[in-house]
Image (cartoon, rainbow, N blue to C red; front, side, top):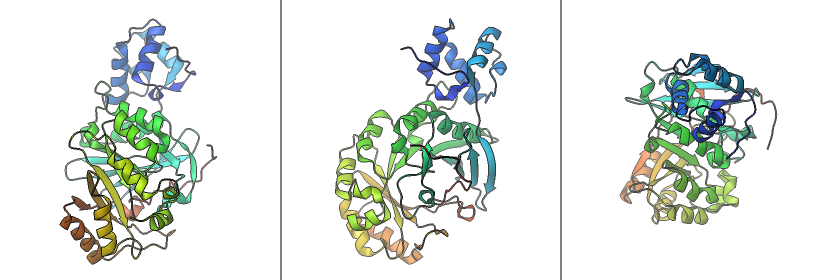
Length: 354
């Protein structure tokens, strides 16, 4: 395989195989790939000159052809609950947001896969800005690498969720490429695939692909049990209606002991009744499922409201009575607009590209 790589390409855009082939083509032993990867991801090197176990000639050649780019941290906001929201500037001056979420003994990083989003979900602030472009493989990886570098103990970042800006399965190649690097045991990142979750609005043709090509956890944003309501909340339902989505989830080739997590945003008066809960229990019966209930996080660009606590608990109890593992997910970072559905990268985009 002969690959053409423009000079000064960010080396994080290349797979391990592509780096090895490039090295071999330039007379360098391919085993040097792992050394380079560890410098980039484990030792957080910003230049090839820092890679002191490589020959000077090799370092010079790498410097001539590649860069090791970082995202620009334009703004960092800290929530009262310890969450940290990063406004990150890309090389083309577009912006994304990532959120570092503190858990009891570790951190979860919520990463973005696109600049903006094309799905148009009416409850989501990200959708209000429209779609700008897909993130590259390297830009997705950079969120993990750069934010991990901020931690006093980088090993405490153990979980990654693709629940930030964008629809991951609409940027399939780059998301899967990034996951491969993030889980690579030789790179210095070495995240467990069992601690990575990809959330999708339900792009049916890609559901079986992500289960085949990766070993991650799959989460499906469902939010309603009937086509009329779901189409109002999520326009993608007009293309992939509820029954087709559930059938696709049922036939996904899940790894042993894995279940699909169905995310259900509870919105007052829209999808939060006892009847809705009973219909949800019946709908998911054919699927290996667990359920995350997410009380709607209110924001200024939506008229939707959060249900009363009694309604939320009643909804959960109905699902429990139907033998579903059901968790009420309390979104963190609401005071800095970092909660589920609140990311907007509040900085004017430069341009829109397909």
